[in-house]
Length: 187
Image 1: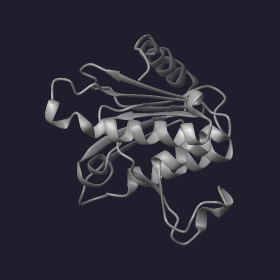
Image 2: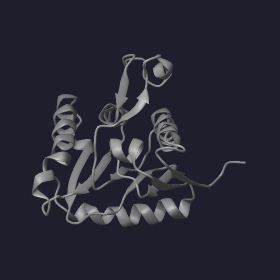
Image 3: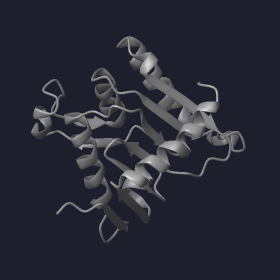
Image 4: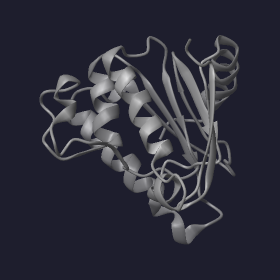
């Protein structure tokens, strides 16, 4: 029996890898059968975090072109885009925190440049929302939500609580809520 909903509480000292392993499983499944509807990544803070540790080459079946190295979020998203997925990314505008304003900009500029080089920039939507606190990662097969930003601190350092829900209702509700971000102009 496949669990419809999975809840995890991660502490830096108790179970630091549990969310990272869940994300790895979600992205591996997605790379094997890409979503037909747009993928959503909504995270106030977003970094090009490691998704796969491919130093051993274990993930060659997913992408034989990947080097035996860390495979980061932008690499995974670009591979999904090449497979035909559309990706919508929403981060906090950070306007009220001028000193941090460059954090998300670095991610945005890198994925913009790389998707343009691949001729796939039309498949990436980048938006900034004022005072964003929502965190969620939405695919056709599931919705990951909770307290975690997609950053090194979120994955490795801070205590986090997440819920991975595979129910059709949760996926549909999240998709409706996230589509409201489409009214924000693209970066």
